[in-house]
Length: 123
Image (cartoon, rainbow, N blue to C red; front, side, top):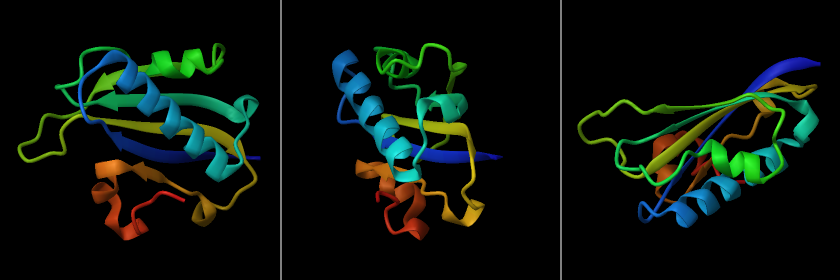
């Protein structure tokens, strides 16, 4: 097994607790499913959110999904002029037999613009 990093992001419509948690759950589910990652394969997950999202910690969604023993961390995304608003990003570290080139990064909604090189990034 090798340690792999998987990226993902979702742009939210509004800063609302339930909307944020639902968006993060959807993103995390799609990241795990697209890469065949089981909860026991996870090493850690780093979440960032833009400064306009203050209603909840993104890691709370992962805890709601049962990831209670996975180290999770939330941080503030850099506030760069022209950056995509209302966006949660994640980087999940997992043990995997997958080649780096086969890792599927997932970008949902407006966040697909962040990685146009991936054809939108959503599998």
